[in-house]
Amino acid sequence: MPKFSAAIQSIPEYPFSKVSNISRQIEQRDHVPVINARIGMPDKEAPQTFKEYLAKYVLQEGSTLGYPVDSHPSRGIPELIEAIMEHYHQKYDVKITPENIAVNSWCKEVLHNMVRMFGPGKVLVPDPVYPAYEGAVVLSSNTIEHVKTQKTSKWLPQFQLKDKDAVALYFCDPNNPTGAVADLNYYQSLYREMKANDICGIFDKAYKDYVFDDETKPVSITQVPGLMDYGYEIVSFSKHFNLVGVGLGWVVSSKENIDRWLKFTGHYSQGVEWYKQKAGAEALTNPAIKSEMAEYLKIVKERGIIFAKGLNELGLKVEIPRATPYLWVEVPQGYNDEDFVLNKIISEAHVAFMPGSYFGSNGKGYFRTTLFLDKNQIQEALGRINRIRSW
Image (cartoon, rainbow, N blue to C red; front, side, top):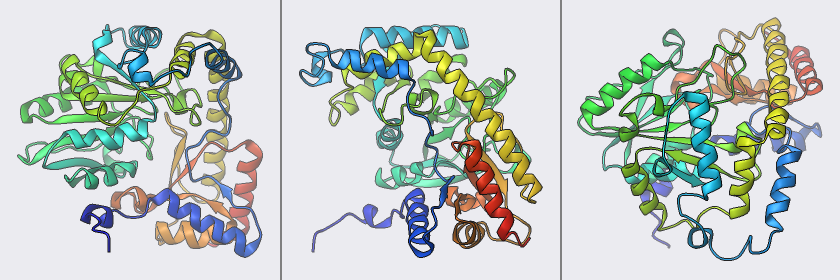
């Protein structure tokens, strides 16, 4: 018998895979397609202008020659680094340097691997939150310390950082699944506690620009002097430019922290393809690409209004989000969220959501739905739920 580690035996089945498998079983049983409102995957692919540039660059002579990390600067090609620096200057009125940046491919892999740089000790994980963090902590040989979030605190985690065994924390903001957004005061207070207790933060910024009004302004760690010394900001192109089929992003931190990160990743990463980085620079600077994405964001915002209104009319309480492509919905009084989603909504209505408890115990009583459905699918989903409604 192979001697597998105790860690691999102890991690649970990934929740999104579990709901996907259940959905397929229901489809096979009833021969009815299940509407997939469970996963945050844009229903529109990368902007056409981006794809044209990607094709142009991949066809250039030498574009696929050699390992990227050996053929180009390990932190990223100059064009993309410059575009990221200008992005931070325009958006946050801050100045960062090339030494503050490292380009990466899939940000989920960054979020998973980064925690291995800390410990041994406790890693603080908000509850509810993106479930990928938990498996990452277990496989890093650290232990999880759940941090409660709740409606009364606007779903912001109330970190207690004085535990001498705490070594790092995860913070997803704007938050998946709740849509919560922290302000500058929250970050400044958090920084003071992190500094006082020598704790580093892994800041997941997958939705930092996924906002629906001019008043909502998610904070960057670069806006808090000193916080880059105690934190890594991980940014993905996946939702901001619909690049879920490409894999591109970056990390921002202090020079010393980025050097540590590059030293660590040098043991397993071969870098990011040149042509992807060149196209990424276009995404951050090209007006046509920005315009295409702005139009898509308007569509997603309209969907959120329609979906929230329909769910509220069905007796499922939900507020229109300020950020993220998700709705965080209360299940009817007296229902268990897992039973409600799996055995009522998926099994009877053939609509797949994610139970709130799959994001953590404090998500009990809620479910998450994506806005990556067109209006016809939203109306069909609402109609299906209405037909089986018994609450």
